[in-house]
Length: 253
Image (cartoon, rainbow, N blue to C red; front, top):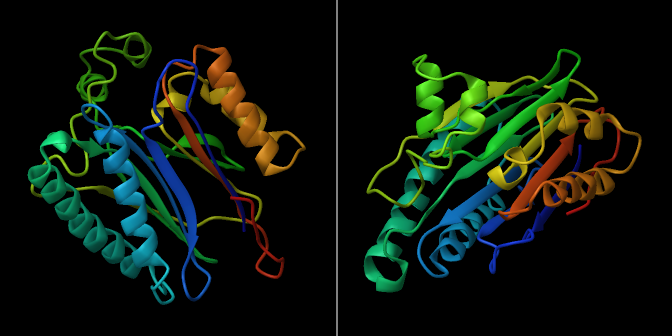
């Protein structure tokens, strides 16, 4: 399993409110996570950084994930626990009032990957069937698309496109979406904040992932394209490529 994590402030923002990383458990499983913070002043930074650090601390002390059920239960428990921590921090620090963060996280083992998401940070897969978004955005426009009130094309230019309906840390409790996939040799996962998905088309993402170059160069190329297309937001991404079990993994983060 090879992986790379990259984040970029973009061309407009004064601060990078995105956080993320790739972390390894005691038994060698990986946790990939992207968090896109929101809130007044620098509170978005606090929410996303706090969330990623808490996930890191807990995952690095975790034993082997032997089943999708175990991975989902771990994610569910930690999301609930970390949501409480972020929410209480916001309650107890006036400068952080109302802060929260999106989360997309993937527990990757040799046999399966279990994904959780809250908000509009996304996880995509590229495999023999093509390129596909695996997560479901928790946004107003996505609800309008799902109910048939607007088309997917309309959603791309909707004035309330960035209105998120769900974020970690903004309420006392939160419910994430979960999905498990069985990956094959050579499959790619792409996790990203909306600073990438709002600026780079799925066709361009797929094209870059298929190019013959190191993962770090693919990540740089995706970030460059997002900045060339405006770069109004922070841009964060993780690329994971699944290799045969007998190959040595490389973590470029």
